[in-house]
Structures are given as structure tokens and as C-alpha cells.
Image (cartoon, rainbow, N blue to C red; front, side, top):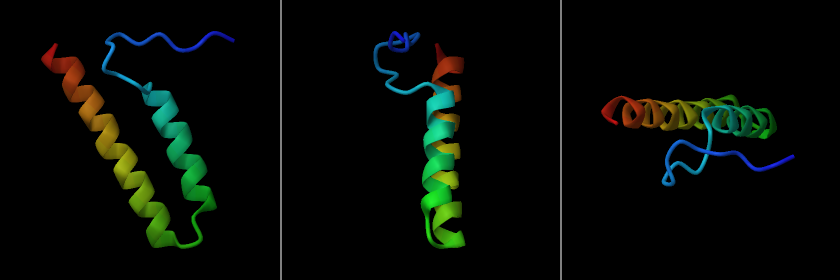
Length: 56
């Protein structure tokens, strides 16, 4: 399977990859607070991706 092709060179992860990684990491996190922190960080990353798309 070929690698992902992103709209911009500075974008190193697709939104789907961010979500998949965050969910996987949250499942492995031993505490609920840690899982929430991981998912919150992913949401911030997705918001940044969305903002960069709008500002283009």
C-alpha cells in the first residue's frame, strides 16, 4: 500500500491517522485521566489541521 499523499508538505499526519493513533494510545493508557488527556491532545491537533485548511 503506498504512503499517504498530503495536501501540503508540512502536513505529516492525516486526520484519520491522528484519530487512529489517539484511540489506540487511549486504550492502552492505564488511567481514565491519561486517556482523556491523550484524546484532548488529538482534538487539539485536529483543530490545528482544520485551522490550517481554512487559512489556505
